[in-house]
Length: 102
Image 1 (tube, one colour):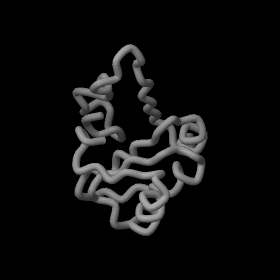
Image 2 (tube, one colour):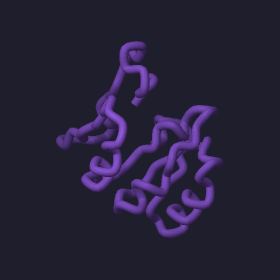
Image 3 (tube, one colour):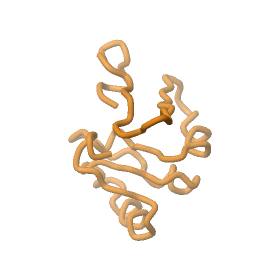
Image 4 (cartoon, helix red, strand yellow):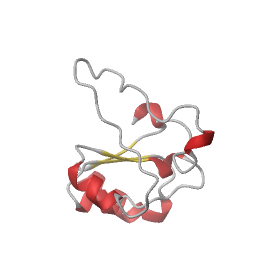
């Protein structure tokens, strides 16, 4: 995913095909409504916490993990570092260097 999800009108790309997805096409969910992530995380096969890929990042990595979704975060996860370490230690999380590694 590229762009700024909180500002969809300024983003040129909201989603893109997952490299190597083959026949299966993943569903990328985006919602401009606050308070729905908990429900989405509970249904997700994997959660990519996009706010951790930007230098301002640090969105909550614990919430999708607590709801059973494997979690992918970027390098800027200092505000939830303990949760990320716990997820990675349990093979329930991955720290990606950049969005292409996610």
